[in-house]
Amino acid sequence: MPSSARHDDADAAQPFIPLDRTAAELLARTLRAVADPTRLQLLSMIAGAESGEVTVGDLATTLGMTQPTITHHLRIMVDDGLLVRDQRGRQVWHSIAASRKSAILDLLR
Amino acid sequence: MSKFPRTIGRPLDPEAARARARQISALTDPVKLRLLSLMAATPAPQHSPSSLAGVLVLSEDEINTAIADLSAAGLLTTDLRGQHQLTADAWVRFGRLLASSGSIETELSEVSAPIVPRAVPPVISRIVDDLSYRFSSTFSHETVARYVTESYSLLADRAHIVRFLPSLTAKFATDRLSALATAEGLVLRGTPEVLFVCVQNAGRSQMAAAILRQLAGDAVHVRTAGSVPAAAVHSVVVEALDEIGVPLATEFPKPLTEEVVQAADYVITMGCGDACPIYPGRRYMDWVLEDPVGKSLAEVRLMRDEISERVHALLAEMAPGAQPAIL
Image (cartoon, rainbow over all chains, first blue to last red):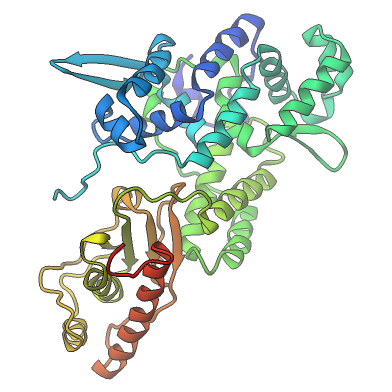
C-alpha cells in the first residue's frame, strides 16, 4: 500500500475495504494483548520516551509496581510483536516495534 | 538536574487507562471488529441490522447484541434518525485499523508522519469560537483553536465519510477539553511540575514562577516558557519582586516547546493568547493578567500582588489540607 495516497484527500483516493474474517481474528488477538489498563500505561510511557526505549526498572519505579509484574505485562506484548526486547548487559530495554507504532499511538489518543 | 529530567513518557492516568482498556476489550471479539469495520466502510443509511446480518452471516439478534455492546463502549452512537454510526473515539483510535488496507502493520514511511495541518472549512472556525467561549476560564482561544484543528485533522485522516466531520469534531473536542478542564484522574507522582506560560516569558510567568519557588522550595518543580521569548526579564519585574524579597537572579526567557508541556502536571497560561499543546492527565488553567510591558512600578506591584494571591491558591489546590511549605 503506497503511503502517498493516505495524506492526500481522505475521502477520495482510498477505498475503505472492510476486514475479512482472517484479518479480524488477527487484529482481535493483538487488541487482546493491549486491552489492559496497566499495559496501556506501559505503552504510553514507552511511546513518550525520549530515546524510544525504556528499562524494566524505570517502568516499575514510575508505576510503583514490582519488576516481575512489569516483566509479565511486557512479555505479553513482546509475544504479540508489539514490543521489541533488547538485552544489553544486565539491563533489558523495550521499545515499540516500528511497524506498530502508528497503531499504538492511535489507541492511546 | 538536566533540563528535562524525565526520559520516559508520562503514564496515562489510571482512569483514562481503564476507559481505553474497556473500549479495546469490546473489540477483542472478531465479530464485533468486522461489524464496526463494515459500518465504517459504508454510509450510515445502509446500516440496517438485516443487511449487516446478511453480510456477516449472523442472526439479527446477534447483530443487535453486538451493536448494543459497541454502543455501551462508546464506539457507536445513534443519530437523530435512529441510524447507528461510529463515534469520534472509534474513528480516531480504531479508524485506521478497521480498513483492511491499513492493517496493524503500517509501512515505516508512515510511522512518524506528523499530523498535517490542512485547510479547515469555515464551520471549524465556528466550532473554535463556540468552544473558546465555553472553556474561556481554562484554555486560551489559541489553545482551543490548535486543539480543534488537530482533532479535525485526526478525524479527516481516518473517517472516510466526510459528511459528519464537523459534528464529530465538535463532539470529540468538547469531550476531551471537558475532561482536561476538570483534570479528572489527575494523579501527581512525586514532585509536581508546574509550567507558567506567557508571551515573552519576561514578566508574568517569571513573577509567578519566582513566587512559587519561594513558597514551595524543592516541593514543586517550577518551569516557565514564552511563545515569543524576550531577550531578558523586564527590569521593573525584577525590582517589584526584590521589594518582597523574592530573588530572580538566574532566570532568562525560554521558548515554549512540546516537551515542557508534556513534563508538566499543571499548565498555567497567563491570559495572553498562547497556544499550548494539550495532553491528557494535566491540569490546565488560564489566568487573565495584563502584560507588564510599559507599565510603571506601581502598576507592576499590583500585578505582583494579584499573581501572589493566585499562586497561594494554586499551592493550596496542589496540596489540599497541607501547609504550603511542606507538601
